[in-house]
Length: 79
Image (cartoon, rainbow, N blue to C red; front, side, top):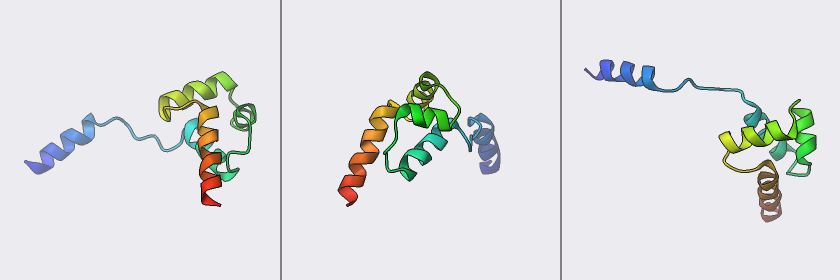
């Protein structure tokens, strides 16, 4: 019974996405300690600024500019 439940849950779960532009953008922002512009981030990821904002809102829940501010603030706290 437990195995049947496990299989049902696995089938019902959404597919796991490993790579996405949002993941790449977050990694880029953290690597550069938030010291880049949204347009630069979008250019590196080969997206328009609007596409990047849309992806960020869907996946991260923040605007890219606000996320960069948070990363910079965390960097200040770290130092």
